[in-house]
Structure formats: structure tokens, C-alpha cells
Image 1 (spheres, rainbow, N blue to C red):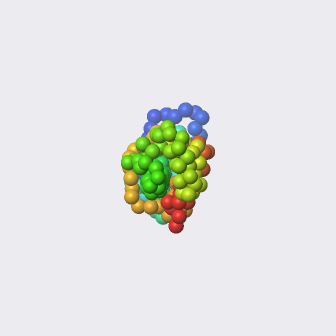
Image 2: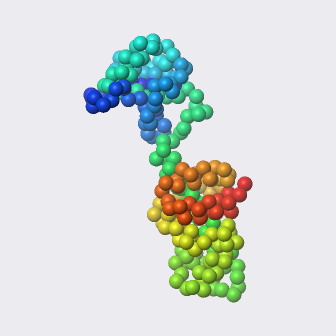
Image 3: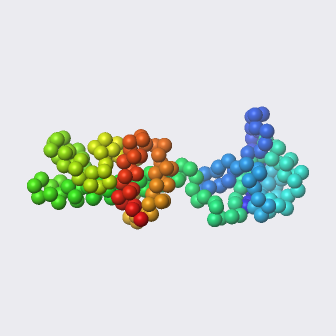
Length: 210
């Protein structure tokens, strides 16, 4: 792990140590000094020295640097297996895209199953189907949705609002394993209502069943 200490403008007196960051994706996340391992690399910019192994820096020198409120420390982890590739905001955006993709696939199945019944008029797209104000159509939607994970009309409406507000039209194509899809749902759950999360979990059980 490499750590960079950058000379900055004085910080407020409430900071007792240098700020330590780890670069993850396009962001800098806070790091605790005790989390740095001996083989991780550090770069002390305020001392104008090159990147070096954290373990090669004397403890007194290190404590002096992190005790300087004018310093900023940037960490690069040596163990890439445990290093995240995206910061939280990037991961959140990626998780939302995955969930919108899962919902699109579930909607495709809903439309296909709905149109299988020769007794009802077919719809050309899911938008027209879900925007219908015909009670008979919605009764049919509810019956079809129950066969596709047991979704309710309230869950369908909540998921529709979620997708409308957040979907960027990014479709990844590949179907995520169920475990990963549920992890993506947990990451993005702060951006949705409980009923929306409940509906998306049911969609995952149908689409990401492996």
C-alpha cells in the first residue's frame, strides 16, 4: 500500500491528525492510521520524498507526520484482493443500474405472459400496459404478476417510480447470480421505499434464481 502525504492549507484546529485517504475508483475515502500494513506504500509529500513502504518509516517520523494538521495522507493498498474498485457513490450508481436492468427483464416477462392470453387485447410495450387505466387490464396484470414472484400492484407501482426516476437506460445484458443481485439491492436500498425493495427482491427471485 502506498500512502501519499500532501502539503495542504491549514485545517481547523478540530483535526488532531493529518487527513489520511485511500483512492478508490474516482474518490478518496477516509483511512484510519492503524489500518495501514507494513508492506503498504506511503508517500510523504510534505517531506518531498518518493513513495516508500510504510514499514520502512520510523514510528516517530510517522507519528510526527500524521500529527501535522497541514498534511493529507493518501493510501494505496498492497492487497488488491481486498481493495474496492469503486467508491460508495460509484458503487451505488452501479447497483441502481443493475436493479433497473433486473426490473426491465421482469417487465419483459410480465408483458410476454400477459400477451399469451388470446382473450385479451395485446400490448406492444410495458409502458402502455402499466399506464392503462382499465380495471380489467389491471386485474389481469395482478393475476399475471402473482405467477411471476407474487408481486402486488403497489409493488409494481413503487418499482415503476423507482426506475423512472433513476434509470439511465444502461442495460448490461448478463444476468447476475442471485447472491450478488441481493447484495446490489442492499447497497441501493437507501434510495427506495420499503415496498419497492420488497418488490425488487421478488423480481430477483424470478430473474436471478441461480
